[in-house]
Image (tube, rainbow, N blue to C red):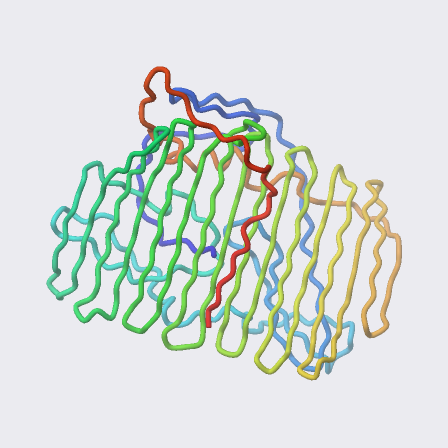
Length: 435
């Protein structure tokens, strides 16, 4: 699930910048980055499609009109069947599933990342926010201690704290530098933990990561982790950067909580994959959302979204769409649906075929009997390249790239395993039961 922590100051080890262009290759040999650029293609985007359903009740639905950015744009729609079946009413309805319980209010607190020695780290009693994607490494402010530390203490208010750091070594040049800290209140009703790490080995693998968890006096609890990895893809031999974030929080005063899993994958040829799985509950309402984007680096694009929700009374509704394009030729299709507590179902399906010659075939139908099947003159717009690609993620990963691996002795080579199955591009099935 994706939510970013409050922004904190951070000094990069060195100045590393790339202009926004596709980078064809990146090698990290003996600390030297070799970069080859290629011409970037820019196309406009017009793929956000919103369809509204008709029902016998007023239902607020939160519709995402885009994906791939850290913060998604959203619109609020309210549908009323008392109006005509084909009407679409945009109203300032309260965002579905966007209620923020009390435990979100402390998120904007700022606490220094590292207090002076022997004073102890300050309490971090703020859960992550929803729908904020994967933060850049500078926003996490990972600052590992350069010496082994094992200390603890008690603050003036009776709360306790601890801080420790170390280094783990293993086979194949594996090294993990880590720092852990945490604490709890005097009465034990609140506590927090944080772990930061960086990993490397002789294969060129590098990793940055953070894990946080905690609970406060109101009973709110949370957990989140963020990870950024640089490695060489075993099938293409290309450099690849992967970022991921998982987040969840539960309210201590309401039957409310949420879970998010975000991932981004990039390689030096322009292949890019992004996606998110989300789940949440607010008292009697539950909602789910999944979306994905895939760019093959040669002009082929696949994007999809699937959202649905339900109430304890039995009302269910959802919306999904998919688009596939290559060189101006492709298709879009989708469905909006609604199920009443009595089991009555309404749906509208639609589709578009783009032929690349300014001709578009549009068709659709609904369970109420409406239908259309026409060919119109219409320009086709779509994004052939991700708005945030390989050059961007390299420029934002200076701390990851600056990780110094152990020096490899003469005659020692990395142990590479090429026996595993090729990657499928599908993320692991993540689920969370926030009961």
